[in-house]
Amino acid sequence: MPAAEVDVSAGLVRRLLAVQHPDLAHLPIEVMANGWDNVIFRVGHALVVRLPRREVAAGLLVNEVRWLPVLGPRLPLPVPAPVRVGRPGLGYPWSWSVVPFLPGEVASRNPPADLGDAAVTLGAFLGALHGPADPDAPANPYRGVPLAERRVAVAQNLRIVGDLVDHGAVMRVWEAAVAAPRWEKPPVWVHGDLHPANLLVHGGRISGVIDFGDITSGDPATDLSVAWMLLPAEWHDAFRGAYQGACGYAVGEELWVRARGWALALSLAFLAHSADNPLIAEIGHHTIAAVLA
Image (cartoon, one colour):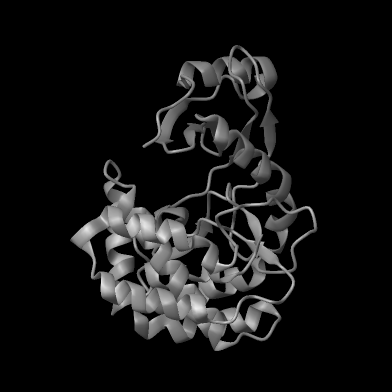
């Protein structure tokens, strides 16, 4: 995991709140997660504070602050749209956000109880999200782009994972996906980092979608790769049907071929860069097995 570029602590959060949002400074504060990009603190019962721990993540948080309040109202699942924004201060160099606490545990630790319900819920969510993107949607050189632009990264990651995977089988799936017709419609909104560690499950059902830092526009196949990460093959048709019913545009088979290619590319990235993150490693192992089955 990349090293933190700043020291983020509960004490810093309390001091920042005292200066900028003093009505929240008395609430209990506890660490929830320390991820690649952000440190997450629970504040009281209803709120969460997110502070970037690396400069590259500061720009991603700005994207969430700008766009989640716009997209959130049209989505059928809760998302962490910021309710307040913090400024740099007290030696902390970047903007930060206060978002609602969304109940649940990530699907990678707490899978949905009813996978048929999960397929329909997730397909409908993505169909709603993948509407026409605004012209000034954030650019992202790694997500939403034509799949062929991931060719170098796929080759590098395949070398890193070595004999963990069947290289011949990987390349057959990859070349078929790259050969599929490209996305030629206007760009749509894309979550950009949709995997089971960014899906919340509460009461056995998918209850929220988090971590929109990679939000961008382009090919929706990037997000549809989540089907291979979360759903057994027998539930893919339900996922596809719910997506088709919600997205508002014709969905051809080439979209699903590209989505399988994205699942392959992302699973190799997970496997190649998760030596100290067993949760992401397990997602990578599961996904590559599903893609190659």
